[in-house]
Length: 235
Image (cartoon, rainbow, N blue to C red; front, side, top):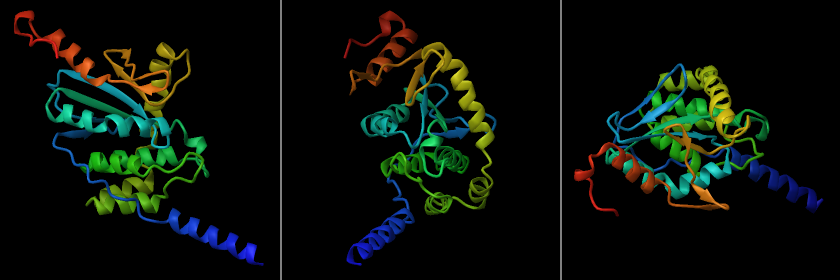
């Protein structure tokens, strides 16, 4: 009986943890952000930025969280300096790996809805800084709604989450990614995270180790747009 009691207590604690609020990230954005309701793509940064990258991610992807942990601060700093613009493609690549299925798409839909309300960056950061485990249920719609409301998002956000407003756009972007990036670079397959710059994959790891990719990319983009006699010395 004692063993049964411990099992029940453990299950109860797991249920309580699953219903806990998502911790709100302290990350803030000092640059413009916009979303395209037809494609679901969220763009941050200035249109005059020297370099633009497409970042393909899934909120349930552990490798995406590792990339976030290692480079998000550098990416945001480059965006703030006006050097970089980022197009976020939030994909339901791992939908089948949550239980029940569908967390990746629901999280992406909520993040796009947060972008519509000007709160994409802290919402996005919150989902990675407390990423649920692959194979888990992920966060519920109630938890996603509570996160948005904690960030000051209102009825429009609630409606978008409850109606899954951007799921068709997310699916279109996903299929487009498979048909273009997947076909051109992954022999018809795909993986997250993927970074693309000027139609080329960006190498961000070497034999499983993350490498310094952002500064060389920015320097190369700057060199390509700056006359030789105006270029600064190599860093």
